[in-house]
Image (cartoon, rainbow, N blue to C red; front, side, top):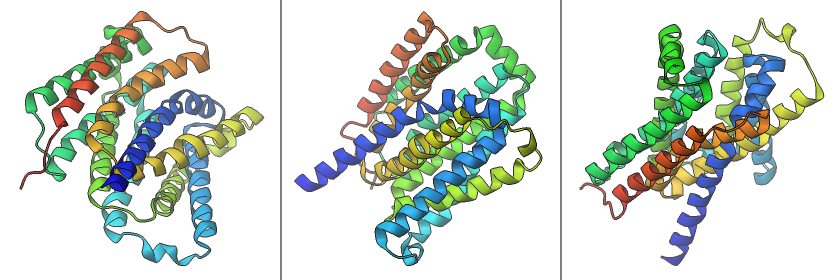
Amino acid sequence: MGEERARRRSATGLGLLSIVLWATTVSVARSAAMRLGLFPAGALVFGTSGALLVIATCCRLRTVRWAGELSREHLVRCGPLFVLYVCLLYAALALARSDRDAVVAGLANYIWPTMALLFAVMLLRLRPRVGLLGGGVFLALAGIALAACDRVGGVTSVLEAVRTSPGAIAVGLLAGTSWGLYSALASRYRQRLPAGAIGIYLLAAGALLAALASGAWGAAVWTPRALAEVGYLAVVPTAIAYVAWDVAMRDGNVPLLGSAANLTPVLATATAGLYLGVPLAGTLLAGASLVAAGAALSHAAFRGATARG
């Protein structure tokens, strides 16, 4: 029992680490995409990250036959969702007609923590307190919306983005839904070798983004900073964070992590402001407070929750 609790706490800690690392993605990825192009940068990041994980798994196990030991259910049910999520997210950004619309489309993706909680209720057959969960979800989404307003200049700008790029925002919502479903399924269908499986998924996603980038490589501006940003993105918020998240979904506290993940867009906004030299507004702090309150309520809704018979 003690070992099980320790493993659960360790896995939950890895999930929280993933949330913090993902918060650094937006600012660095945006900077890299400005130099290399959206799809070329994505292809490099995911392809490099996947290759590193596959090589690391081969070196750790000292064999290339580990692929036969992967959970087939995880490969079949989770793998396509992982690749779909990446492609939908990049498609949403590509469909946006302006930088403002791209920001809103990217923030639409952050519906995924809410979807992860809802899918966890359905697939893991948990029985949360509905009133607390509903209130928590509402506060968290309100805080995310407030953060979005801070990023793009107010409610009017958000509504204008919805009007001018409805397709981009709809695809962003689909991306968030697919990642929420992936997270719940990764908890149900456990993967023995998450680094190897995630490496394969990343390689597949990188290959698809490379195909979409076929006509854009010539416009890429190769600079030391761009390459450093690709390296950072490939290792830290991709290889490390995605593997840590899969372990967290397998062994950690899924409701707590789904609730805490609502803080990701607020942390990402704050990180982007610091990295890009943009001053942080008071509305961001208000949004962070709402998200934190929503996360606390959502977590409380699952405290003591049991599986339905």
